Image 1: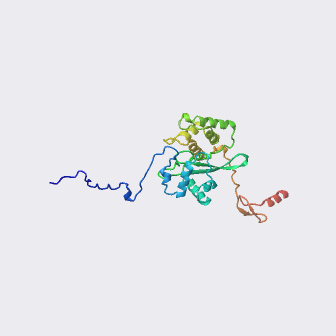
Image 2 (image 1 turned 90 degrees about the horizontal axis):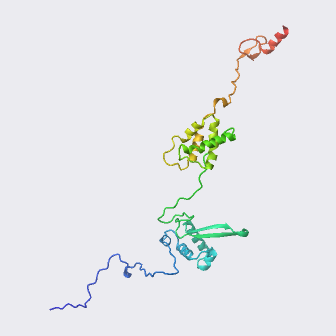
Length: 282
């Protein structure tokens, strides 16, 4: 009778597909946990699809340096075997993708120095908004556009400007969204004064500025008011419109009954010269 050998090796198990092992030809990590002297590098840099290997290596080196370290082209070229041309090109790559910012600033005694800022995560904060893989760029902060121009009164008296300013300052009582700053009020006041100068009552101006406003939040109410003041400016009152005199009547040409000379007159007769002669003779 056969006796089972307990020391015999068991049947070999089949390898699990997809497991990382030396015979699969793939990468194997032999990692040890760092407890000192290490730098955290994001995969967006280490695996950047557009940066060159030199640019990635320089970025890792720069991020590992302490604050105040020199990272100019000559210093980096002295540290690495690559020349200044390749170092400069790699730094420009890092600037393009937001991992580096270099600005020239004026120091004391007329000196110009280069200030270098290393960004370990572009677009995350600070002044940088350069795109990086998998992240939507933040909108760049820009200065607000200037307000549209407004009409100007022909006689901007202080009393008229004050009346216009008071009217604008009171608009938020009729629509709380129309709360104007001091600068916006100063810009719009001449436009309101131009309306008041044309004999439009303050109530009518207020109605034009606050009626049929959009229902949603007004991002910049002063721009909307400036547009209305310019686009809906009424005509000046009739008594202030200069009226030109009617053109003189042009009479037809006629032949003088005395000298047969042509002259203009409303009816047939004699010219001025023949009439003078008749008066002298009389």
